[in-house]
Amino acid sequence: MARDENLKRLWDDVVSHLSNQFADGEPLDLDGIIYIIGLQEKGNLSIKYSKDDKINLMHIAICRLLEPFGYYEFDYFDKEGWPHYKVLEKIPSLKAGEQTVLMKEAIVNYFLEKKVVE
Image (cartoon, rainbow, N blue to C red; front, side):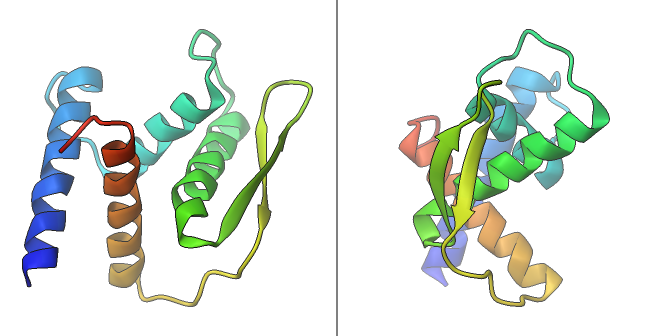
């Protein structure tokens, strides 16, 4: 139970920090946070992205977030600067709630690593 409470506290800290920084305090949802991570990982914030690019940014974020869990591994940057990952292990079938918990845990770990939250 303590692990779940710690994850909830850290998740709330991440949401609060990012919401204040990027959404004028309006709480960001999971997809919004994943998109922000994709932008961070792509590294070029000055261009306008197409709808397909935005989906690709979210895919990059998911790969990066699940990399420490052993599901993906960074492979290379293409000539346009897009990171590419290779699949190491298929993600197991999870219920929606389990997927959400996995992603929240991965996001919290990402921002702990970046020293955004403690």
